[in-house]
Length: 87
Image (cartoon, rainbow, N blue to C red; front, top):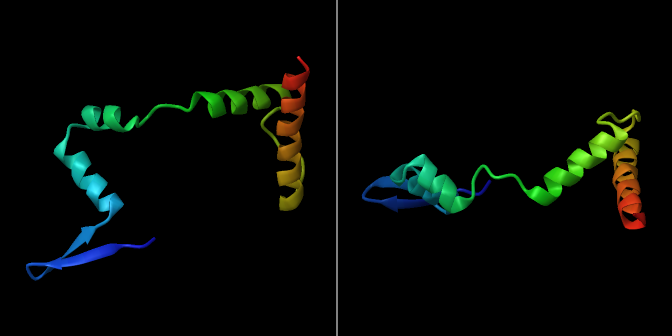
């Protein structure tokens, strides 16, 4: 992670997107900050798709090798998309 540091009045001060957002968060109440940023909301499209794939094919992956695990998961999503396109 790249950290931006600015020297001001003899002390280091963090600048950049994250420290700026932390200061913004501290100035506001949590609920106001969360509402402005859309924090805590689920993404309807991806959450629904993951849920549907797990319901249809299960959560578990049977493969042992990492490469095959990725392939198996990819096949589950591909099959789900094919079934959606068919219906």
